Image 1 (cartoon, rainbow, N blue to C red):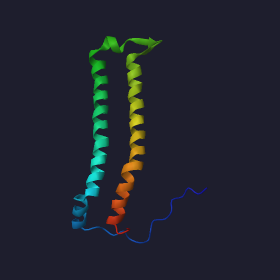
Image 2: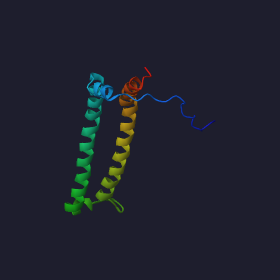
Image 3: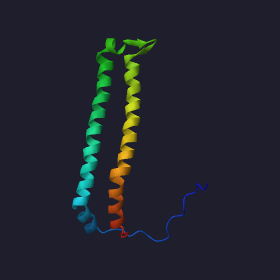
Image 4: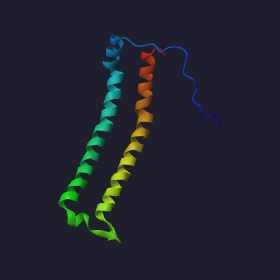
Length: 118
């Protein structure tokens, strides 16, 4: 099984003009791509920041609650701290999956059209 990267293409990529960039930026297709990305990324970012700040505030001001032992030496603070890592990885996985399915194909279509490939 070959794992080497193929050599780069010999043909140079056509660079779009400023007018072409502006036209694409104002197009409905680009607006839809930008809107779907924002509708996915912004709420998820806000939710994670709120979740993180809740953890920090609980750690700072609710020491008795965070120190509540769940079993053995494992307490609420440890459970919520580990949940921070879990949610970080879940969000990254969800974003990668969503981007590959929804954002990347649209972006690739716009890019190939801009570079004269389609």
